[in-house]
Amino acid sequence: MNRLPTLLASFSFALGAASAIAALTLWNQQQKFIDGAQRVPATVADIREIGGKRMPVLEFTQPDGTIQHVSAPNVSADAYPAKAKVELLYDPVRPMQSRVADFRSQWLTASIFGACALVFLAIAGRLFRTRARAAARPSAKLQNGAASRRKR
Image (tube, rainbow, N blue to C red; front, side, top):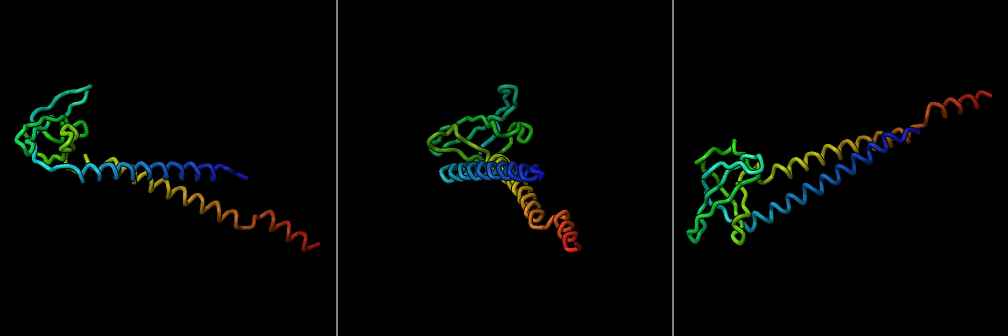
C-alpha cells in the first residue's frame, strides 16, 4: 500500500493548521493594538537607511502637543516618499509602537498566513478524500479473485 498520499495529506494538514494558528494569532494581536491605539495624521519627515533597509521616519503630534518621530520598519520607503501624508496608529502608552493605518501594514501578513492555511487545508482535504474513496472501493485484484472462485 502506498503511504505517500497519506503522508502528503498529513503534512499539508499540519502546515494548514500551523498557518491558521499563525493567521489567527497575528489577527488577534493586530486587533488588540488597534483597539488601544490612537489614530493621528502623520507626515513622512525623512527616509533613513537602517540595517541596509530604507524606511520612512514619521512625524506626528500627540494630543498633548508633543512632536514625536518614529521609524516605520513595516513600511517601504518607496510606498511613501518624503513629505507624504499618512494615517498613523500609535499606542499612547508607548508612542514608539506605531503602524501606518493601511492594509499592508495592518493585515497583509495575517492575510498571507490565512490564504496559505486555506490552500494547505484544501490540499489535505482533497488528498484525504481521495485516499478514503480509494480505500472504500474494492480493488480490482479482489474482484478478479472473487470472480475466478465463483467460476470453479
